[in-house]
Length: 158
Image (cartoon, rainbow, N blue to C red):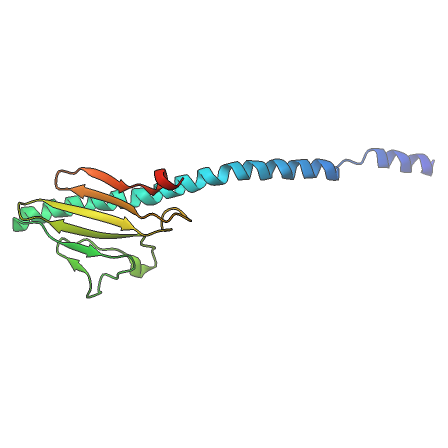
């Protein structure tokens, strides 16, 4: 009787074989390989939206500054620049928070024209937005709130 009981208990054991586990691991690996490039593209687009939002903020600050001073102000905030750094020229109140531990991927600057025009530019160096991309990501906004890209690395490198 003990022999019969031992045979029945072995037949009732459940589990996965090594082959079944390897198939599942292979399927997960294939799905991950398909998902990683898509995730990198979404990540790069999110980094670009940071520049677009900051340029839109610069537009608002420029218009407010013009309302107060009747002229447009200057911005020169490079990546890694702290708000207290002497190298920052900032008439309009635009500040980057690199000193608080945040990553600053873009350098922002503005060119004020003599005829009451201005253009603000955001430039990210190579490999800042898309890894292994040798191009710079460049966005501009004008006094008419025209937001354009002179070099879009998501389209160029992905």
